[in-house]
Length: 435
Image: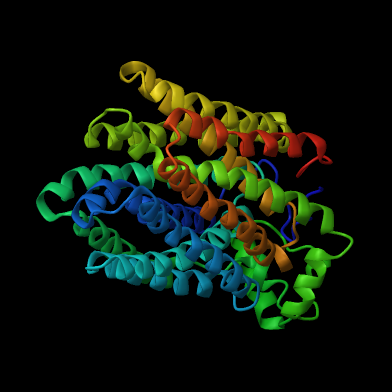
């Protein structure tokens, strides 16, 4: 796979202008809240299971409800970002997320909570594709790897915040308070994005409208990055045309390889993200120890995402991706063994697992943005993320089913390390990725 040429001049060595920093920071803030919102179910799972007497396989359905919503959002809403713009799509997604979180906080049945998690997932699924494209398109070449790494870091940071909020709120307000707090915080982002998030100049320059091209030129002038002659307004591409380009001869190999990569990685990733606290408690630890293990996992993830972003600039995207994905597979298998030991061994294994998981996230999401041109970037990201969502839905479901079948947590972790190891082999056997 080769990176798509950007319509924005590279501007190598340049620092980022205020408009670039503002756009990146707002996108990072949204990804922070996505981590909180999506993983609220993981941190509240023990309390929900206790209140409603939910078996592990039914709890897996609750985990997968949000992930199924993410698949639907990535498939149905992500293409809007290449049609009506990144900014408008992000605003729509924030409404979905806030509504779903508040609905979860007001639910009084398994069905109501499942429906609310689906609504939340729809918003999160599409917003990740859009904010990832925005960060890639606004960041300068010099800081793009770091910015994409920060995107990956904000997800575990939000999850860490969610774990802290869960510890503070569950005792006083119950598990519903966690969802209501997340919904309120997400709602606050809506006016901020409406007022301060600019539309991507990459999108504006390819709409086919002279007025949009002029807006792109003005914005790029503020960023001291001239619009190349090749980026003059072109004929507007239909949705069907975008799909045809993504699966056509020029991009087909990239699309298939990335689809397989995302499916395999997300299967292992979301098994751990959702089941880690519960697995720890099943091995004899307390519920608070389970939440603490989830927190350590996400603390390690914050370091992993940033270091991967820096390493990409030095060692190349393909090489870093291969190492990160392979290390993640090994770490997933080791976690099931180490979790039973408890103490420092559990903490170190959770930190290492989080490091490799979010180093992988930083790598594959930058890979996804680099592989496609701006005119189809978010549509392609949504389609490929949908393949990933299949894996993300299967991960928690398979984990719950294996637990219900009586397999030990240690054996389950070893089995669900296999998809990540297969993904590392896929990167190894593919043409150079994103180089």
